[in-house]
Length: 229
Image (cartoon, rainbow, N blue to C red; front, side, top):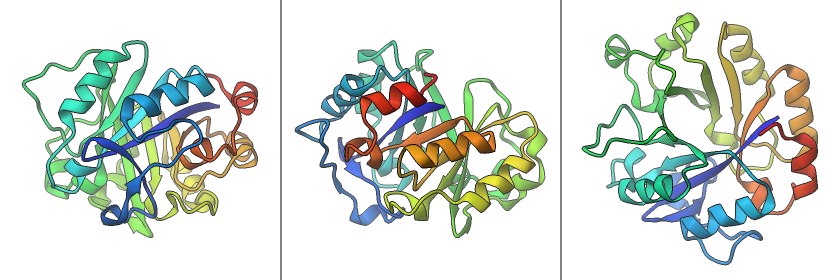
């Protein structure tokens, strides 16, 4: 299992995402670090396990309320050995040329049917996030063309995020059956070891995690037993 810690950035600090209700997000309280500063959170993750990939969501950008681009640039440059998956919405271009350890996520919540016709999803440096909150958010047409999906596809169950109720198993199985040559990444509701083992048994070997890491439900020993990167 490739376990990928999640960093939700809002106003320059890491927040605790719950149910996708971004206006209610509060600074993270974690057993891994003393503050919600992004660098402290990343160092806390790395003390727990030598993660090679981390996911960053720019909550301000996704909410059309500013951005955390400057902070993300600092993190990407400060931790060159970590591959960062960065979700800032639909193909935001910066004067800054991102280094190789910055991979862009394109999420359906920012993707309309009209945009879908002009966006190339196949580049190796692009990751697709299928964003669900009860149903798919954004372009529903994307589910009709799984052959156009990139290698990495996140199934993001926003209503499950931070809920500690388990993943959306039915949705994950449905998308896995649709996917042809894509690796599915489970996101939302993953509680701990048993959920990760079940995902692996389903043939899903990548997962985004936050709450179970910060709460201590997953120990360093657990991660070493489960992880492949």
